Length: 321
Image (cartoon, rainbow, N blue to C red; front, top):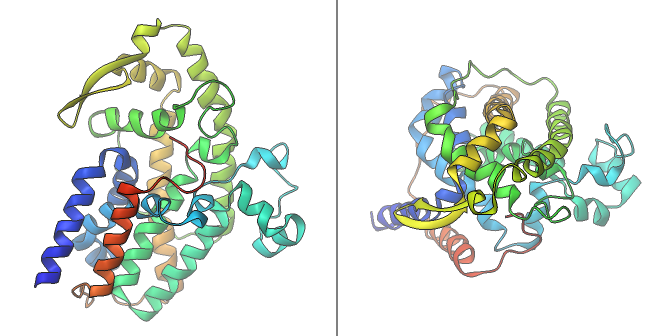
């Protein structure tokens, strides 16, 4: 019983202390649950809060492990013009062509999604409820990341064009302002994915193609606003915080013609699709009898370490916010 209360405290601490910056990832995992068929929904729906809260664990792990960072992005523009045919899609072939060190330097997101998909499939086969939830939550994070245009660009935070902060502007500020009130995130049932590798790469290439629009559009908008209109002190979790103004954010979203909403919808569909695909590939095991067991002492320590690293350590690897 004590373990249960300790875990509940940790989850609440994580959610209330850090949920603002993680809004998009939590929203994506939450809505992805409702795209699943009844045989999966019977297990995923009761654990929807876990899947939402722990969607951000991979970002927190970037404050603990240096090797975590490259799992979140891939600088496709490093590999020449689209469709980046110099970069093999298969991991072993890519390593032979480019070396593992070079691939890691420019990001390994598509290949890491394949690793997480395989882990989730094996967890379904073993009917390991803890691993199913952990891997599903974290797979959702990585899949959502490849839908963000600047996760597929070496100019990942506008640092090369004098637009520092645009990464968080696109993926955090816009959805935080609009997702709950203006966007339609209700989507039909997720499809089974016959070619996960192809889908993953397709979404990454789409993101890379949109990166220039993300950057160029903000450059155009900046000319239409005076310097004192771009940022504003607005309430954020009960405190006045300097951030991109609501007017500027709404204008940016309009100039992008709904791009952020479309990418979030695509993320939701892709996350649910890969959850479903892992379950089908595992033989569609019955999930109705699964129920979470109390966390072990080791699990609680791991959660504490992750939370403490996130709160107290500098990020390991490159920053994008």
